[in-house]
Image (cartoon, rainbow, N blue to C red; front, top):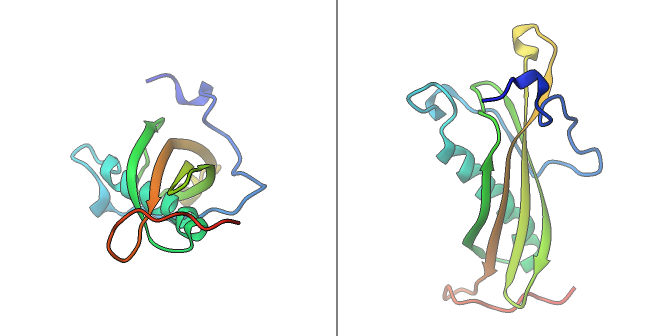
Length: 141
């Protein structure tokens, strides 16, 4: 892994033009065998975060139909304040594609200077579904 202090994803700022969709702090029970936060935990949180703008746009229930891309850029550590930002990048007849970017803020609890790191980027597609779990059209804006 490249030196962290020289990496472009380090020492970034949280997006100032939007609010996080989800913010959480991972706990020791969310770790893998190496003591880092389990990738599956991050994936679940990304799916949840991405579904929120999709649900709002669909005005109802959605189901995840594709993980178009998912990149783990840096590990997430126990105690990081993890913020999930998402925006709709495409809307089809029944589908909504959401770009999710994840940042971790760390260091402050150890008495160090707090740093913000871009840890994950993902693109997911959701489909609006009806009460019978069948695709339904997304309402016009």
